[in-house]
Amino acid sequence: MPKKVCIICGKERKGAQVQDDVVIRAIRRVKGALRVATNNTLVVCGGCMDEYKKKRAKFEKALVLYVVLAAILLVLIAVLPLISGKFFSLESILFGVLIGVFIIALSLIGYMPKIAEKKRAEKRKGKK
Image (cartoon, rainbow, N blue to C red; front, side, top):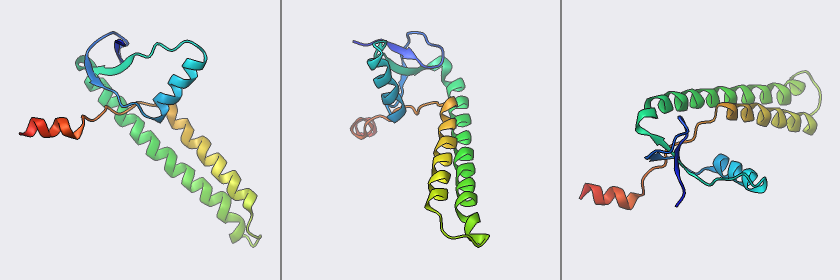
């Protein structure tokens, strides 16, 4: 059985399990390819929950900011040539999308995954 490791303090503890999303799976694949994967179950222990909530809120705010910034740059890069009288340019749109993806990827620097929701069946049992 894999160890349960807190993503905040790094200690082996019990707690709320972290959702295994695209980013976590990608990290696990890279670590597996490098043969350094430990395949621990990632959790947030009770003592670190407040710090986790702060970090998650900070990540969500940064993600929204980066998405808005990327959208503004995409519009400026793709639409500005049309306003100035030049023709539609596929290259400028592709460049704008590439820059937008890069900007959004910057938000992954402070990435903090969600806590996994319990299955609906478990919730129903608790309500009955």
